Amino acid sequence: MIALEAVGRRPSTKADRMAPLLTAGDPLADAVIADLDLYGPKARHALDAGLRKGLAGLDERPPEAVAALLKQVETTPSWVDPLMLHRGDTVSLSVPPLWFGLCVITSVLAHTYACPVTARLLMRTDRPTPTVSRRLAETGVWARQTIRPGGLLRGGPGYVATVEARLRHARMRATSLTDWDMGVPGLPIGQLDTARTWLGFTLTACQALAAVGIDITAEEESHLYRYWSYVAHLLGLDERLYKDVADHAGARRLQDLLNTMTAAPDATSRAATAAMIDAQARATAHAPGAVLSEKQLEDLIHCVLRRSLGNTAADRLGIPDVPAASDLMPLISTLNRQARYWQTFSPASAQAARRQAAEEPGPASQPIAAVLPLGVALRRRAGVRRSGTPAA
Image (tube, rainbow, N blue to C red):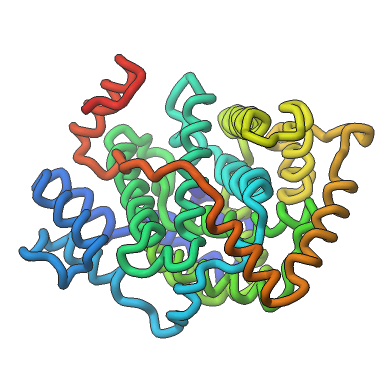
């Protein structure tokens, strides 16, 4: 959540225009959550079938809110190139899966946890490691589904997963508002928080990749923002936040503005970030074919985050500075630049690299419990606490 009083720290016409978005949620998704709670299985079945088959493919008219959401996500903006969706996010697909996880996913989550109110909302537990481990897995699965060729076509895995993520945010808003401190301005997991996440997968991710020698061209940069603008559409992000962001320069302007409206990271931000780094390093070190130790991977992630977020932001998040003797970045950057040169040397080699990345095996997608009616979701969480596995 973004701090309302922070807007006044930077007089700006743009900030004035964005101020109403501080308390803006996602009316379509919020209404669907209300329908899920009201109509139960009927609404859930209609939503699930509608996402996969389309509104026109339903045998019966779904609840009004479900129909409105399906109509919105099925209405492809005029600026979207259908061929782009068939090809997928060719920029992200050109990144080897190892570096996609170590750079993109970790930097996105660190960028998310830097907002203290969001970190506290996401970390409502005294056991941060299981929480961030699950979020690492969920974020990685969603990202891989989203960037793959055809993933965002209607009914595709990325299309479904993105709308489910949107509804998960709406569920979190509905749940948190029942005990939210109304003396704190703004709205939990609102429009500006979604914008921060979107910037994480575009600007921050590219800065993290550049730190390990994976740079993109101006043409690739343009493609990246066109593709992720459609992701923003599916996520329900207000068009005013992303329609003018076509490259890193525009993204930096939006990021700077959001930073002026966000409180500094706190102890929860630092705890969540540390747990996330530990979980990522442990998972990578124990993956098949791993060549770096857990400690080496921690140092590597620290270097990546310090270079992608900047030293000031990294210091506020408690990310340590790695001693020069332990810094593997110069060697890794050189090797990655050489590898990327040959991967993109010709259209054929570039296509082969993207195909290899797209075919990389990953964890299967799991149902999103967050969009279930509140009572069902709470019962499932209770089942997890009792037995260690989800309740039936």
